[in-house]
Each structure stands twice: as structure tokens, then as C-alpha cells.
Amino acid sequence: MRIHDITLTLRPGIPVWPGDPSFTRTLIWQMGPTGPANVSQVTMSVHTGTHVDAPIHFIADSPGAEMLPLDALVGPCLVCAVHPAGRLIAAEDLDALSLPVGTERLLLKTTNSDIWRRQGAAFSSDFVALSAEGARWIVEHGIRLIGVDYLSVEPFDNKEPVVHRTLLAAGVIALEGVDLGAIAPGGYTLACLPLKLAGSDGAPARAVLIEA
Image (cartoon, rainbow, N blue to C red; front, side, top):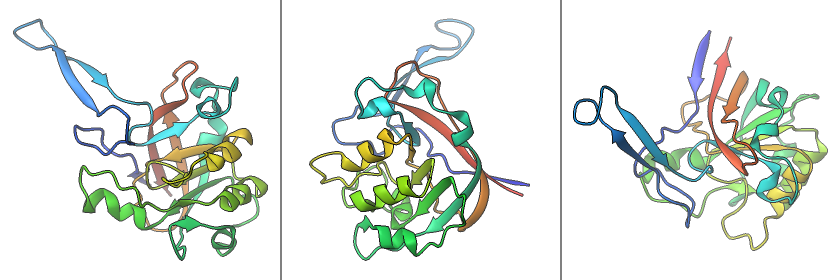
């Protein structure tokens, strides 16, 4: 059994969505001067690094992160390489994957996976994301969790969050910011456990792929 960690390391300088706070970790107690232990305080958006979105992120009066179903976050998963003509993953790109009937968890590997290594701390706004039609395709095909290899399922320049609203209103979990650079397409078992934050619009997660 091999376990592949697809979680981004939270560190100072990790790219964040424009307007979100930068990630910081500060020692508030330090072994020696202030006591017998090191104790850190972390400041970050819940949408930093590898994270999941909860419905309340864009759907008013809907569940928060603590209500996300664990049976959607853990189970058989397909990693598929997708090569759209531009920056939008369209319905025809997803059709071309020929997913097996019953696929519930899908991670999309795109050229985004190279961004983490190529640009270091710089946020990239030209990442590949789902089109509105692609989001509807995900819902119509019974996908319960969709994962992408950059910080959003939504294109950066969308004026309205149609992709998020389509997915979240249908109860589809968006797993964003996974690192698939070293992952070969194929079947795995996904284990993705977000922090149990009451009422939160999202939550950081540790996500791994288990290869039998």
C-alpha cells in the first residue's frame, strides 16, 4: 500500500486568493523564555492551501463545514488528466474522460499542477477551472466530490460565482488546492478530512490518495 499526500504544505508565502490574509504562524509561547513548551498561533483564511468549500460559502442559510458528509470525503476516487483547449474545462472535456458508471469522487489533473513549482509564492490568475457547463455536467453525472489542482473550481474572472453555486446547491463538495503534480491518473482511495469548524464556509483539509 502506498499513501500519496496531495496536501499543500502550509507555510509563509503560500499563494492565497487575492484579498485573503497571508498565512502566518507565530510562536506565542516558546520553550525556555516563556515556558516549557512551544505553542503556535496560526492566522489564515479557511480557503488557504488544500481545503474544502461548504455550501454556506455561497448559498445562504445552508450547512457549514462541520456538516459535510464523511462518506463523500472518503472512498474510491478517480484522478483524470484533462486537457481543455483553453482555461475552461467544458462538458465535452469531461465527456471525453469516459468515467465508469457510479464514479462519485473525481480529481482533475491539469496544467495547474505545474504552477505550484513554477511560480513559488506568486498567485496565478490564469489557472484552469470549470466552466458553468462543466459544473452542470458534474451535478448531472452524480459526482459527489470534485477536486481541482488550484485554489478554485471557479475561473478567476467570473463576475458571478455560477460554478460554485451550481456545485454547492447540489451538495457537491469542492476540494480545492490539491497537489497532483506527482500523481499518475488512475483509481485510488481518497481520504480527505477537513477541520470540523462549526458554521464555517470552508475548512483546511489533509488529503491523501491510497494506492493498493
